[in-house]
Structures are given as C-alpha cells and as structure tokens.
Amino acid sequence: MKNIRNITFSILGLFAISACSSDWLDETSTLQIRAEKQFQTEEGFKDALIGVYISMTRPEMYSKDMTWYLVDLLSRQYADLPPLARYENIQQFNYATSRSTGQIDNIWQKSYNTIANINSALYYIDKNKEVLDPLNYSLIKGELLGLRAFIHFDLLRLFGLGNLTQRNLNSEFTIPYVTSNSKEITPSRPYGETFTLLQNDLNQAAELLKKDPIYIHNTNSSEHFSEVNREGFYDDREQRMNYYAVRALQARSLLWMGNDQEIDQAKIAALEVIEEAPFQLITSENYLVSNDPILYPEVLFTLNVNGLANLSNPLLNANSETNYDAVFISETDASEIYETQNVNVGIADVRYNTMLTSQTRGLVSIKLLQRNVTMHPNQVPLMKLAEMYYIMAEYFIGEQDTAQAVFYLNKVRSSRGILDELPITLTPEQLDEELQKEYRKEFISEGQLFFFYKRLGKTTIPGVPTTVEVNDNIYVLPLPDNELEFGS
View 1 (cartoon, helix red, strand yellow):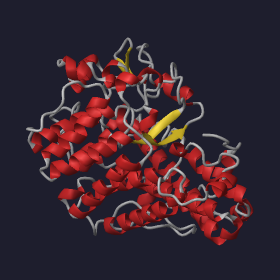
View 2: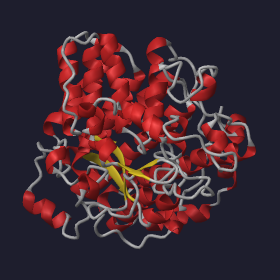
View 3: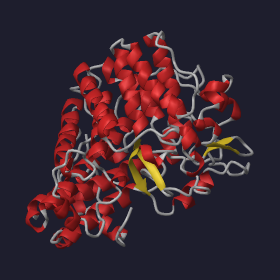
C-alpha cells in the first residue's frame, strides 16, 4: 500500500479495549483526551484508518490465524500436525486445552480491539465531520463501516452457529455486534438483530463507497479527486475495503444467512462484482502464476502485511522433521483433491502443478511463501473473484438450472488450466460435489473451506475420521470465559 505513514501501535491502542470485557470498566479519560486530539484533523482520520488495517495484520487475525493457519487447520486441508506442534489440539478440535483456549481467545480479543478502534473513528468522523473534505468523509467512513462488518462477520462465522438454511435461529443469541464507542458492555443479541446490524453497516458502506474511484459509476470530478488524492492515499484500492469488496462481502454474508430472499440478494451482489469490477479471472496459459501465486488480478480485497516472510516462511517449510508447526499437504491427499488420475483435470490444473511445491514431508502451498514472489509480495488475500463465481454456481444449483451452474464452474476451471469441461447433463447433486471439489482446490491457504463446510452443515469432512461426528461441537469455537461472564 502506497504512502502508509509511520503509525505506531500506540495509535492502535487509543481505544483498543475489548467492548466485551471488564477492562472497559477501568478506562480513564486519558484515552478520550488523546482521541479528541487525534481526530481534530483530516490526517488524524487517515492515520486511524491505516491503523485499523495494520491492526488486522496481527498474527492472531488475518496475517495468520484467521486465514491460512488456524482456520485452515480446522478445514483439515493440511496433514496432521505432530503432538509437539503448538496448534495440534486445534486441528484435532480439542478446544478445551489451555493452549487452544489461549489461541482462540486471542482471535476474539484482537478482533474486538480492532472493532473498538473502528468505533472510535466512526464516532469522531460524524462529530468532527467539518474537518473532512466530503469525499474523504465518504470514503473513510465507508471503509470503516465495511471493515466493522467484515470482522464481526468472521467472528460470527467462527463463534456462531452455521447451517442457518436448515434451522431458524432468529431468536437465538450470538456474538455481540458492537457499534458503540461507549464504555458500556455490549450484550449479545439474537441472530436476527445481529444480521440486521451487519447488513445496515454494509448497506451504508456501499452507498458511501459509490464515490470510490474503483466504482465504475462514480460521479467524482476527476480534478477534485486528484486534489484529494494528491498524496496517493486512495491508490491500490484492492488493498482497502473498496466498493466491490463490500459487495462481495454482502454476497458472502447473505449466502450465510441462507433464506431464499437473502440468497437471491447474494446472487445479485456476486453478479455485480463479476460483471462490473475491474478484476478478471486469469488465463493460466498466459499468466506467470509462479511469480504471482495469489493471482493478484483476481484479488478483491487483500492486506499488505509488512514482513510476511518472517511469519509465513518458517511455517511453510516442511523440509525439516523437527519443524513441528509446518503445514503441508500429503502427496496422497493432493492427488485426491486435485484428481490427478485424470491428466486433463489434475495435472493440467495450475493450482496443483504450480501453486504447490514439493518438500521433504509433502507439498506446500506457495501462495504466501515469500521466496520467488516478484509480483505483489506481502499480500494476504481476504476476498477473491473466484468465490463470486462459486456463489453464482451455488445459486443456480439451488434453482435447478444446471446449465448456468456448469457455466460458472467451468469459467473458474478453465481459468485454472483444466482442459475437461463439466457437462451440462450433471444433476444438482453431482454439481454440489463439483462445487465442494472446487472449494477444496481453490482455497488452500485462504481460510474459506472450513466456513463452506460449516455454512452447509456438512456432517462429514474429508480428512476427519468417519468415527468423528462433525457437528456444532466442532464447528462452533467456544466463547472466552470473560465473555460468558460479562457479555451474555
């Protein structure tokens, strides 16, 4: 990301107190005074926004645990970790150990700390609106609202229930959706109210971000935008919560909510991203995937993680038997996932022949391996275009329109180099299987597969012994003890 200021984590700590912990009760007016000073200028708001993105790159959040490490371990994509590995209990769904509890609680704490920072900025952006150019006001507030929804939704996916299509949870309580800059503890709300708050944030964000330069229908004066962006603050929109990232998040979250009307709206949002956003599926035969394994032209929203190599490379080194925390895929599992028995499907797929590298213990995903990356290093993608194609395919499977479902699945398959097209004669049940295959192939090291299983209420997961019952005990991470005491 261009022109990131030298922001220290003391800025992040302005209001970095979990809204769901008793620490709020000890807060003094000192932080309020610092915040009042911070938000007296336009630069203060810009620094606060960048501070939120930096906060999201913590290992407990999106540079590791909430993307390619802890959440992907839950999906069982990786080979079993040895008993000495720090996350072995997590991978085995043993959430009650002290080590697992600490790892899970850290996600909760860091996420709500970041939300508290967002709420502080949102409070002052309306209070001190006059210090901002109207365009800066719209873009900064739109990004903040989108980020608040993004983090809350991932907490909901981790700590809340899934498979909502099959059960009515509107009156059941879930995680706190914190919108206040108050010291008061935010209680949990029912799912129905929580989803309303989530969609309200996203609707407001989408409306404000219609001034986003990435939005093809924006009505900004080019001269005015050039003046506002003279320091490049709004460059590289894919590295920020942009308009199309908000629409993609709407598609993702509406699909999770799962009733017919919401699924229809998810389809509309996904289609808008596919048809209008300045992102395109790559053509694998014409694209140097080895230099850009995250497929940057398809990235809707990514985080720039300074020093990613120091975090990812040690954990993506499966050459040493004593590197207990390394994550890799066994040759047998990779062959099954990518269907390598069919040369035109598996061997031809760049996700197999290029995005995996062979090491001593198995195959390692190179998506986040910072060694030969000459294009777009230090990027951890959070939303990509392929997911929108999968949402479209899932919608049409539900509509029994197998031809359209096949069309969207084949678009991604062809982009990845697969030579055999899926036939339109496949049944909806067969297409459901093909969709799951695609999620397994596409989202290694991206943290989305576990949520796919959970959203659909899968009772069996590849890699999990058939003797293990996959249910809410596995799908729902336990709330921290202090949340049980103070939040609910």
